[in-house]
Image (cartoon, rainbow, N blue to C red; front, side):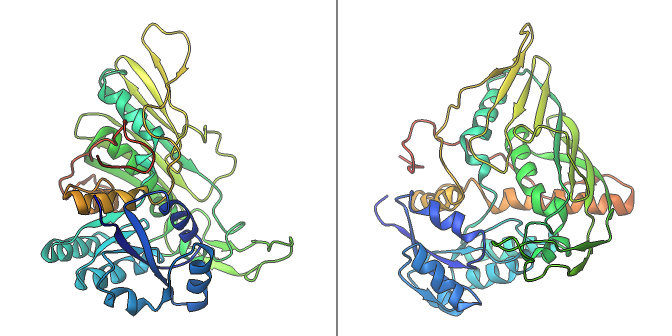
Length: 377
């Protein structure tokens, strides 16, 4: 594990800081260059995070030293950027979702397989101590056989706090494609492959008004702009896993005061106990367990490394390249999530169950014995 894996970043928007700030903690990763359609923004990120150079997008693909393209563009650009990276013989790791539809996602994975390169995709929050500890509880039989689950993410949408929220309401956006990847990835990691699912998807608020304010508290640059809602802003679904566990998932941009526990929004119910799972939009949240015969809930100590943030999935890919092992936050996992998300929308239109279209295996657990930043021996 001597030679670092050089990474080129495409897309220097809001999420890039979270990646670039954490990447320095992994000895296998070297952020070699960054690019953005707005070159000044790329230069600013290079300066802020001590990246050697800001370059054009084309230069990322033509640089032979770059092995991974970190794709942090908007969702509808994920596949075009990934295909360019794959054509250049580079591995690609993307911000979620993998693609905005199943056909494009499959096209990307097929191209990567033919070229012999890896595809990885966020979210990587399931690699944090919280979800990993919850999975260990299930795998160790702490709740017996998993029977049911609930998974809730409810909000009023992003127009009040995001300076440019339009893409959240376009095709490829919406609460399922925005927040669903966190929850579905966590559930797939905890419970394994999905057998079938059904969904109800509706537009509850057809038009949004941007009310984002600037740092001084005055109107933001798009304050008052009307945004048409082009994709469902409220989705409810039922999932039946291959292991027999079934339950409900709900994501919404149309509700106020959710009422659910934002620290533990997923609950897994078993024959011998019940597990409260931490927020899958974070890495180290609390895990609570109550078993048969116990009168109270108890917090389960984390059994894995704490403190990771976005880039642990990218780092895992870097280690996988050198170790020649599977990627945990893999394209296959992301495609299963994409298939499920689109499946809820398809089911809502057809009135029929959606059966999953591609095989999927749970990724290996994280190592519990290695120090922070080391993901392989």
